[in-house]
Image 1 (cartoon, rainbow, N blue to C red):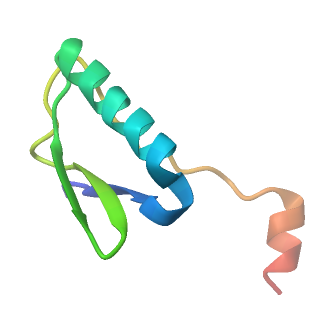
Image 2: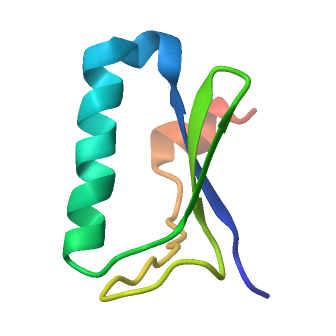
Length: 75
């Protein structure tokens, strides 16, 4: 099963300075050959890490065992 990851940034919380920094990060990704679909709407900036993710990057989803404290709090 193929995984789809959406990385979403709250534009209001980022503010103008944060958004400018985010665009710089996106540009840096492009400079090293990493590309992916992006989008914006509903006050958010999204990175779509799906079939569009290209370049020298690998996303690995890992599962982990719950700690004893987490297991206990499930009850």
